[in-house]
Image 1: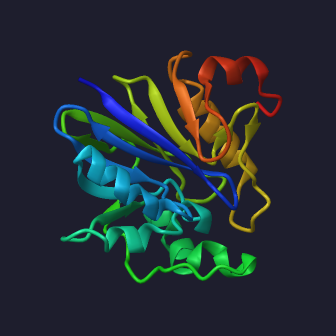
Image 2: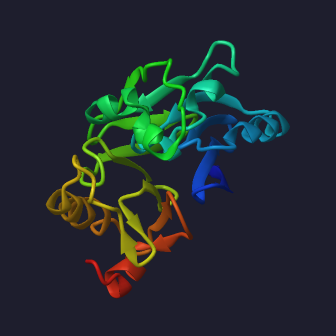
Length: 210
């Protein structure tokens, strides 16, 4: 059995939100629910999934815009996972106010991601890698069995994440990419927070920023 992955791309920032589940046990999580992601409730019902939690790669508003209302759509409400180094950014609304967005942060993430942490989703395991640079607490989620990494905004197809925020760090981002992403097997699929997916091999060969 394997992971089932649904990818949804939503306006206004072309964010990718992922609904993943263990094919056998039907246990699921939502990764980076952006604007419009409440529509996932229909697919969750259709697939008869038992949702476990919501995982946030990093606390920019466009990656958790509907995390709180989604969490509260379930009984009991879903836990939210975030690296503690991004908690201050979460509490600040992920800087949404700077873009005219009022983001609901009335729930506090209760799952604290740590580097090398293993999470089980049914019978599937995913490993957490701390990948700072774009934000201090950015993480990626890696499934070795599936050869897939959910990368948020660390790396994109032939590009990398922004480091022009006050809390960003270009050196840290480059280190994260080289030590955490490019050391994954070359065939690993990189599912990004924006844009199309890529692979480690493609980025090693074609990414001009690496």
